[in-house]
Length: 486
Ligand code: BG6
Image (cartoon, rainbow, N blue to C red):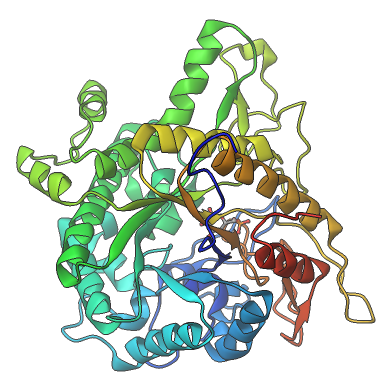
């Protein structure tokens, strides 16, 4: 052992993460009306999801039914328990609690569902970890209040948070205020998809000029950050034992060449995702970001009075979602067109999934180190996994050795980060332990699960669950706390 405390804790939270809109289905049941992802159609790697204004005839909206977790959660939790899960991160669909977003009173049926879900997990000795915003928002908030462009939405979000802090009292220790709000920033040419899944608005809705869009994206990013720190304060007030973190989707950008220009560029690209973590961990909104807004001529509505919210809303832990790394360069002649999800290039040293995501286990160790050294706050890996096609055999088996290989390599680096680098990591939540609807493409065929769900991209299938080979492997890893990864 290279460091005193560097050991996989015996209470390490092994488990998985899911999100309401990707698994629940039951899109109009028990009082829920319409949330933003109910208007996202099915796409594919090469065909973007469309975001329609109403449900259009003839189009497939995969989130309407998803994998029907709303009705099958007991059976699914039994399978998670069979694997020995210590924790499950799930999200609450805001629209189940306040179907219009601005209703005076919450919807009792929605509350009851999440109370039952948490109870079922606790019954199975699985720690429920709750995300309050994972791309779910009532459509009415977008239409009536302009989504995160307005401070009214911040207030509505806080009211919803308070409702849940009370409703789930005694059941929850760990709360997550937002999932991956870092994906929209004026310095990136944010893809429609990222803008939409966080706000229910598309780039087109934001304005006709690039400047207008940049300003609005900056406002939304700022308002969400403000909402996040205000939620932390409310959370701590609701129960001093509550811990609240925020989950960020982070990836290292490597320089393609040793040209210092490339290095500087890669540093900036990596760091672009960090201003909100800085704001939530350091107790003040970063001055470099305010200066950047000023330089770009953007007015996000920042007021020095907001500083007290940042001071009082420091998060307790950081959630890391890690999937891949990217390569960037300033050399036009070296750039390739086969851009990755965020516009970077592929790495010749790494393999790539069928969906174009590089496979980089060392990038996980790199990111864990970076986040730990920057903030000295406990970290939990809230998402990591391998989305690919699986084959269900006639004998009801799924031989997903590629997924085992992916996870094994990532676990190997994760254990090194803990045991050799002394990163304070308290859990690993694999995304998505049961096959569910892909967020970026809307496909079922981009499968992550230990559990296969018989559902196809066109919505057909029995919806039956089957254990994949990785199911038994993960169970073994949990039993020996990551010591034996074979
Ligand atoms: C994360 C999101 O960014 O990526 C999840 O938090 C999402 O919601 C996951 O599902 C994987 O992305 P995809 O598009 O493969 O589902």
